[in-house]
Length: 438
Image (cartoon, rainbow, N blue to C red; front, side):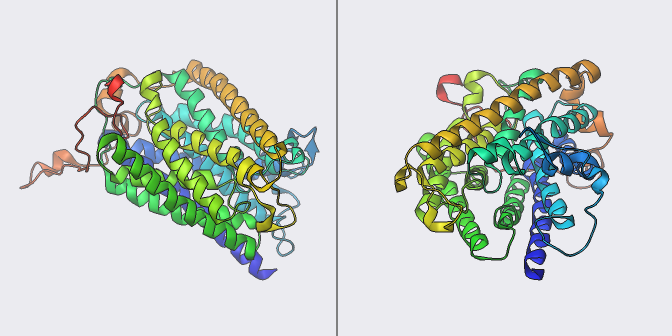
């Protein structure tokens, strides 16, 4: 039991590291005048969600079931009755710590969609309301004792529905309310620091082992399966994304490599302990290809998802969740596992996977739109066009990531570099526009 507890606490620390990793991943993709705001949105989510989690969030997600929809938020108000050492790591303080990190990263994921334009105070208000009204209930649906999705028999080992589909749908809803950035899509909005992006992707990949393998709640063979499948899918997705880039645009980019890794990690999250090696390879390859294609759709539909949260997290989460209906195999985990269509299991699992994905997506999208409208009415939602053009870092935080003025007094001027040299217009993520929409 002590070994399992140690592994779960280590996994919790790894998952917490993912949010600073996400901050670097997102921060590198925005323009130099917006990077601090992006970092602050991620770190702000850490502070806010961490407090709400211990006050009532854990209880709302994992308290006594109320009609399959919510845990009783008063069961463990302020973690009452849970702050005791020892015992089963799946209950009490260890589980509180581990699951807190999931709530934090899920909320922070949304921030990338509204980069460059959302007021920090508006973001914090939205984040607090959304995590309370959407994430906590959905976590209960998927993982809580008595949650309706769990009772339905849907498979989600580490968060395809509760985390990635949930955050991706919320990102879409919030973007629809806030509208486009000034100058998008005509103005190229390139990543200002691709090394930051690569660093962030590496930290996310490292932390994801706690995310997926830690969800076994034991240092055992299931954790090992989840670990290996996480590596396998991420590698396959990176190669698939790069190949898609090469075929479409004639070159493979560092941004594509980083994005492909994240797409594969997203897609394997719900499936990591329910598929064999071939299933992991398929999930990764499909996710890398489809997510690489999906990020261009925002130009076609005019939806300014700044850092492709919808294209990577919503699409990747859907890929992994739905593909489980085809490639899940009970031969991997034995008791508790199910067989998908490719392994003779029939269409039953596919049906519940699709239902759970659609239900979470629809609920999160609807509530995000309503909360976005409320926040916009109360706070205005976004900075003024003038502030957006001059830089949201200065407008919202009175700070700048790079002291260009000070550098001019010396022999050299500091200029942030990036490795994108496109021949066609790009969005903020540096991905090329479709020729038909250029």
